[in-house]
Figure 1 (cartoon, rainbow, N blue to C red):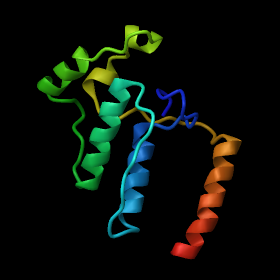
Figure 2: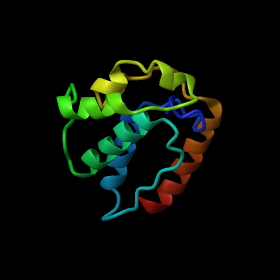
Figure 3: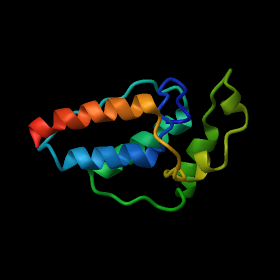
Figure 4: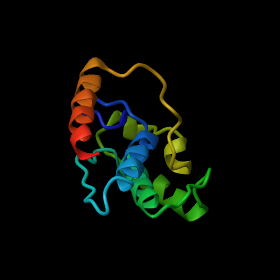
Length: 121
């Protein structure tokens, strides 16, 4: 995710959920793990969406007031992004689509995964 500076993927949380959904149809069960977790707003929004995707839930356009209040109480001390978070981090689960080219190193890794997948499908 763009908000996770360690990932270098520049994906929206929608892309992550699409991957979870695609894997859900490929395996009778699987273990979902995560790393990082530096940005509390992104982590909360991402994992809520992962669980919602696994359960087949849809996402509201705007978070309920009590969920929004929780998001507004979060802090991220010592980080520039934590000083003035964008409004959508408080009010929505879904990121805006992130258009653009796929980075060469990411494309190379995806190509390797697609080659491996041919053996499984």
